[in-house]
Image (cartoon, rainbow, N blue to C red; front, side, top):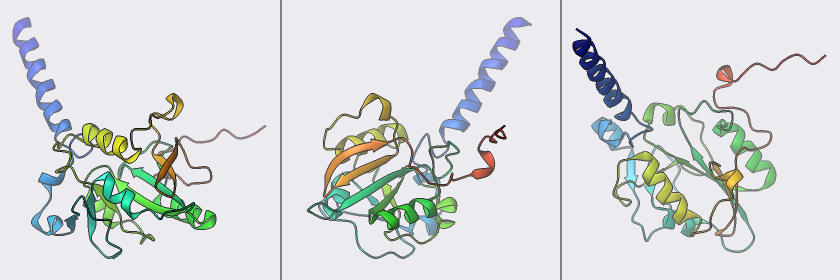
Length: 202
């Protein structure tokens, strides 16, 4: 009897694990998209910059394409590695990040970590098209791996400081990586209703 229960528990855990790991965020989610959603994604050749058109297309890029798109000189660019369904306090709404970048005269590129077309289509029009990581170029569907490879290439091999190892906001001067930030001061959370309530001040 105990052996049967143990086997049943293991099977349940295995099946639930499969269901979890097949979801976007563990894997890219690209293979689960419909033909119409696939048509919304354009894979940019790695030797070309990001196209300037900002319509309904999502451009899947390697880091080198994004680096080619950054202006030379001292202009500042912010790259936001965005989790479409991230409920962390560090995950800000795209609209508020764009507003902050406008105020500071930063160029903004938002890079979705995985393909969640429903969430992407809900976002406001930004100054640049929403990008995705070209998992074909990095030869893996595993989200954590291709994000790590993309991030390393984007930083041109510069190591992240320990306190910013999981930072989502990358700051550049020209196309030179400056630093990573864990949060963007003044940005609104992506899902405000999921943020912990503040205690009233005494």
